[in-house]
Image 1: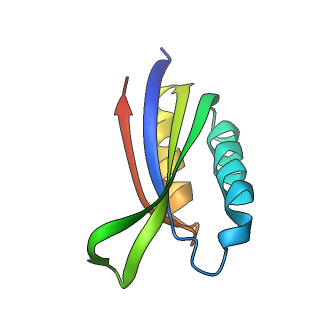
Image 2: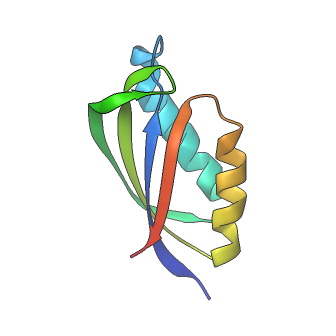
Length: 94
């Protein structure tokens, strides 16, 4: 049974500031390739971290809303761990 999910993904855009829109779309395609159906992508923008996390001062926050089977979340997490542009990722049921 499909559920509605919301995901916040923090991108490491150091040296890729001009490619942010392309990175956001690539991650959306990866979610869809694993079986999710995107409903909305909201770019929150660049925010500074409270502390330097893994030698990174800040990141570009993106909120993805999509519908998927529960097992798709593990597949997406695993796939995005291999993407060097993804700094942090968090998922929750809406």
